[in-house]
Length: 257
Image 1 (cartoon, one colour):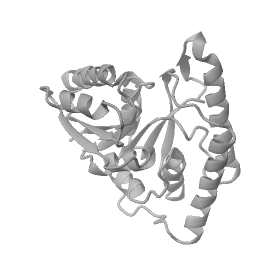
Image 2 (image 1 turned 30 degrees about the vertical axis):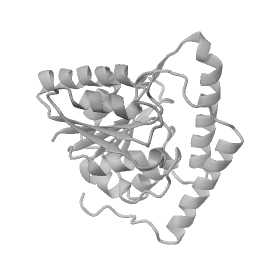
Image 3 (image 1 turned 90 degrees about the horizontal axis):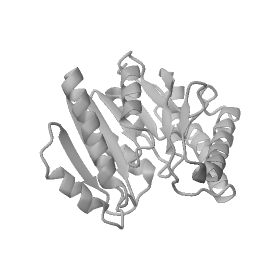
């Protein structure tokens, strides 16, 4: 298998059918034009809506690519959900992206092409000088809050020497070589949204090649974030990562490069 695309899903009933059709068309484009073999890995985090039914209907259609449908028995968090998909995937290149397709399939291709150059990890960067945003004026205030919090958190990560060279840790589109995905996601301990930091930290300490990719972001209003509670939670997660390394809970060298 050439490419595995992992989609974590929760509370997506209102837009999931449209997203799956866009994903299908995007994969078809790559299969027809680049002769690649693709696998779609849908991982539902015990979503309380009709997301699972929509995925099962999609699964029952005819597709020229493989599909895995995984369902968490209980709500476990995005970190657990993405990890499960990454470890179940069979592709040489493994990419995850958000199910609302804020990063369109065209941006998935950019990450894929970067991986094909031989880098270990390719991540969509919202702060890259060549990144472009497509947004509606109605979400400007919400975007400012999310963007400011993300920048503050990424700065905190750099200044605590956790990942000093990465400017955007929280982008929802990241790709990995298969062996790199196995090395990183088999070790993850964080279950929530801070899992991205743990992913990049493990890549950093293992001296893997990480490239930030400029993208075009179609901004959608998602879950609101609290500066106080979410900011404190992320800070505590940074402390946990430092503690786990000090206690020797991580394998810090990737031996199969």
